[in-house]
Image 1 (tube, helix red, strand yellow):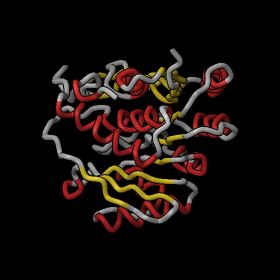
Image 2 (cartoon, helix red, strand yellow):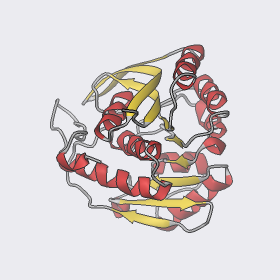
Image 3 (tube, helix red, strand yellow):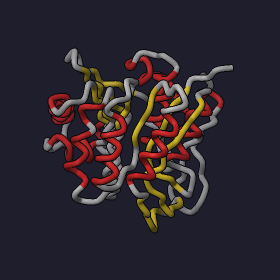
Image 4 (cartoon, helix red, strand yellow):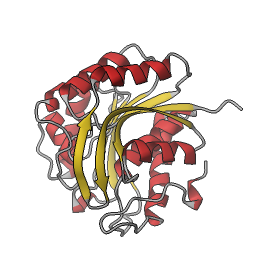
Amino acid sequence: MTPAIALTIGGSDSGGGAGIQADLKTFMALQVHGCSAISCVTAQNTLGVSRVDALPPAALLAQIEAVTSDLPVGALKTGMLLNAALIEATAAALAPLMLPRLIDPVMVSRAGAVLLEPDAIAAYRLLLPLAELLTPNLHEARLLSGVAIETPADVERAATRLLELGSAAVLIKGGGLPALRGRDYLLGREGLGQWLAHAAIDTPHTHGSGCTLGAAITAYRARGLALADAVQQAKRYVEGGLRASLAIGAGQGPLCHWHADGAP
């Protein structure tokens, strides 16, 4: 058996709900062999993050090189990169790789918690020209594009600006605004933007849903689906995971990665 292979580059979540752990669970659920390159280690649980330790950029580069020099990676994604040095190292490593690259600019959580160092925001623009698909939430789309976002029209303007900065396509996740709950906006270079709707699942246990969406898109791209189809299939997978979300711990639990309707 020779499975599709996907690589995730990002941070470790000790609580298992987001980051590298969520990505690898998603890859496995979608029958893709998952590889990882860890950028930083977090101490966190369902109540929040208590500590973050960044790895040296050389350690991150060594992991990416070890995987890509040996295994036929079909697609990759980036997640939490934390600081400018790690972002710059990742951009240098990804530039020569001719494969689908999803850039999830983990900068601010949907609730507004900052997840990277202040001087790293500008560095993120190095990754935009490398992205087949950029998947910011509303906070991240605002930071990267400079467009204030309060309405659906603002989302569309921000997406256009992000394409101008180099991304081949952008998927802005609308969950941060009540009016956009259950709606995401996809725009590619062909200029035909579309709003993608899914059921708004009423659960407080959504930790890791953004990571999981990016990982599912990456898995489907590694398996050969076209980008638009991969996005649609991934959204269905995440919707199922939210329906079966896990009420674990004293805070915000994660979605369920092994839900019954998550099979390929």
